[in-house]
Image 1: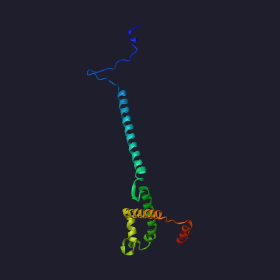
Image 2 (image 1 turned 90 degrees about the vertical axis):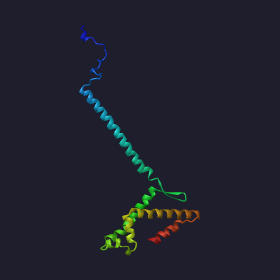
Image 3 (image 1 turned 60 degrees about the horizontal axis):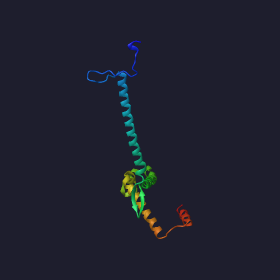
Image 4 (image 1 turned 180 degrees about the horizontal axis):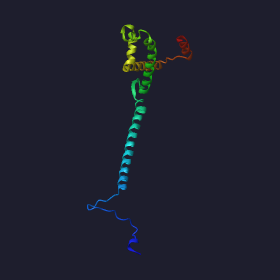
Length: 168
C-alpha cells in the first residue's frame, strides 16, 4: 500500500495563509453570508410581528376598557363612549341629511340664525363637540339611573308599553 492511499480517518486540516486565517471556498463564504442574512431577516420579522401584536393588543383590548368617566362608582369605558358617540353622530347625520339636500341647505347649516341646525352641523364637522355632548348625555343617564335605583323608582312592563304606544 502506498502512502497516498493511507488515511488517518481525520479530516484534512484547513488551509491557512501566513497570518493564520483559514481559507474558505467561494461556496463556503456565500453560504455563510446567506445564513447571516436569513438569521437577520428572521429576527427582523419576529421584531415586526411582536410590534404589530402589541399594537393590536393595545388598540383592541387595553384602550377600549379604559375608563373615560366614573359616576358614583360606575365606570363609563372608552368602548361604550365610542359606540354612543358613533350612534349619536349617525342619528344627527340622519336628521341633517334632508336639510343639507334641500335647495338652501348650505345657507341653513352655516347660518346660526336658523336655530340648532348650525350647531348640529358643527358637531358633525368637529367631532370633539359631539363627543363631549355624548359623554355628558351618558353621565346624565348614569346619574338618573343611580338616583332611580337609590329611591326605588322603576317602571313596570305595562307602563313601558304604554309609553312606547304614546311615542308612536
